[in-house]
Length: 307
Image (tube, rainbow, N blue to C red; front, top):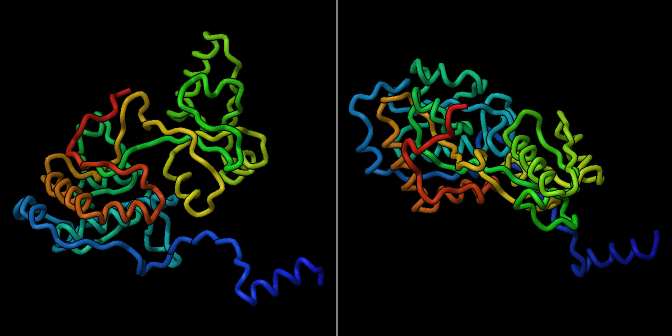
């Protein structure tokens, strides 16, 4: 046994040396004992349409797509959806005095399901757009943000404008809004005579992180929630800058219901009550996405324009 190892063991035994804190693993049990619950909100209940044809009486049937944390994944039983979106759904159902019936679905299937009345609502990272507003009503509950992230020990301090990416290698998803932002910035820098930026593409998340942390890229630009959540677990990266998912326009994520169903007013009231009570903030904090909180839920705000 080496002297340093012997000293460490003796120190641990004497309580003089502490092991470094380990990241807490997420609770993926179907029971979700740590899920934040809410009290009934009579103001919201009073706004429910009389004799509304819920899919199941006394239940709020919500579609959600388990695909990635912190939004949602399948629990250890491979059947139950858990994550930030299911937690928001629980808050809404509790507020309305209803039992939550959560239905995991493929993301592409929710529009038809909500339109046909198969689901009362969908809570699954749906951004408000003007095109979607023609068929659906919205109650906003989270900002749609993009984030620049770099390893914690990176010398980079901030990326807030086009000039900040000059000369960097930046990882980005192909065909995304964030890629378009970078392409526009690259042209802006070219006109200004600044150094070019190299965009780097990966289909695999693990390969992307490996490239970032091995120094083969300087930063990653993508959906903020996923990176913020990973950082809440690992503490291995830092946020350099945030932008709206609809940059330069503002984009918001919303509970989505059938157009004209009348549920939107009640859901918006429910969300605002939980924002005021603090339970909403606790849900976002549970999944490391406090930075995406909204100060107020809104019904059918301006959405991203039609392309």
